[in-house]
Image (cartoon, rainbow, N blue to C red; front, side, top):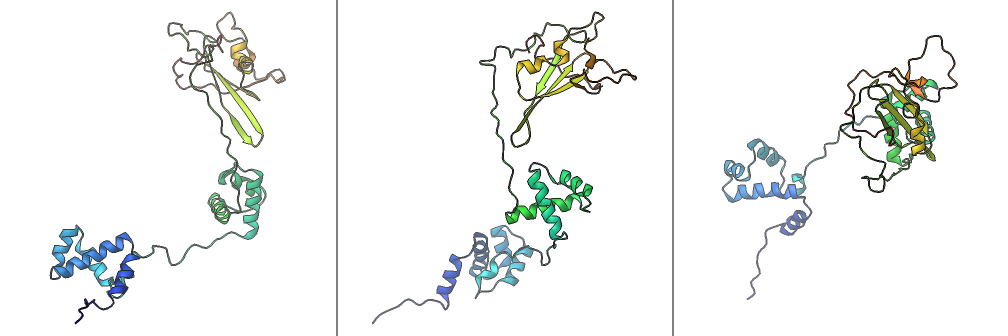
Length: 272
């Protein structure tokens, strides 16, 4: 006599289906298994698993013993998706402008398109760029990585201004700053800005290299101060109303900044 263990009907199908379920679906299956094992006491099952009765009964109405895939979460994708409102000509024109200006965003591209007669909004240009990027028709711009040097090791000129050095007259302390600007591939610009702490006049120059010679060529740091205490350079003085000769001014004086000056912690002009 041979004894064989009895298996419930469709048990192999249920085991195969359970192996393909997600973690959340298996957790929900345990809810109903616990409910059946405890005489269908739904309140006890909800307290045991820490779920609300509304959640339990919602999944119970959806649960099918013959199809465990009913315990899977349904897709939240809307039935009706928003269709593109732009034409193929507009998408092609946006792609060409982006190839011409690879680092420009939707705001600048929208201005160019409006100047050319295209009636597009900034949001539409952004959606067109996203669509082109998803289809692989838009190449990402190359990233320029610039190594930054940290610390003053090997740079004896990078010294802070002494704290006991008084700053009282224009020209006593000029703050210098520069940055690395790459508007297009192969184009490297080094904008230099200089600010007189006392008079709060700003001057800007653009060079090809960030060197001490370029920094020393800024008028606030290269020209002496007048005897009256004001800066003697022409770009740091307000322009006269009748003056039209601008050929000798190599820099662009900016507006007077009425904000509070930052603390005097920049490089000294003599050290720059």
